[in-house]
Length: 223
Ligand code: DX5
Image 1 (cartoon, rainbow, N blue to C red):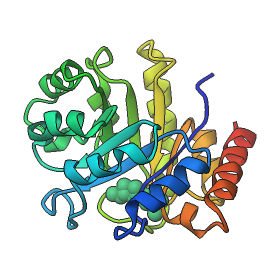
Image 2: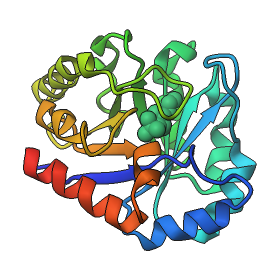
Image 3: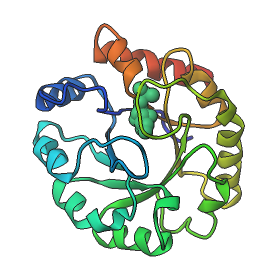
């Protein structure tokens, strides 16, 4: 059974004190950190790039995954590798040649993953199972934290889990991102997700440690 992983998005962090927040997250027992990289073109928001990720690398030893809400993100593969990322998550609708980009990501020593915006078809994972290490089904429209969880994505999550299993990718992680909190994580877990991105909900807990523990327990109980 794929293990439950709780992965904070640093979108709600205090960007004037990122090192402090990353240290606090590290001490809370998180599994990884997701950096939401936005270009203001694919999504109506601009956030951080490889330089900021690199500046935070030494504040924790947990893996960094870069969620690229960016057109033609293959331009930044070497920068992200240099910044210390272990995984790059791409939206295929932002790439001209996804298969080639996944190969180049692996060649740079990083894992590649596919993110599906709400109306992106699950078909995008066909024929690239040998090149990707995770699939992310978005449960909000990409671009902002603090949005409401889209319950309508739960059948899509379940269909994606079934598709991955049918393709023999039974150990591949299935991540969800957007509106994940104490009231929504169980539904996403029941639908088949095992990796959970949480931003605003995690920041609302009295402590990161309490949030990570509560979310992990709720996900485990729902499976
Ligand atoms: C959207 C972002 C957010 C973020 C999580 O593009 O990817 O989903 O990571 O934000 P919350 O947990 O606040 O919905």
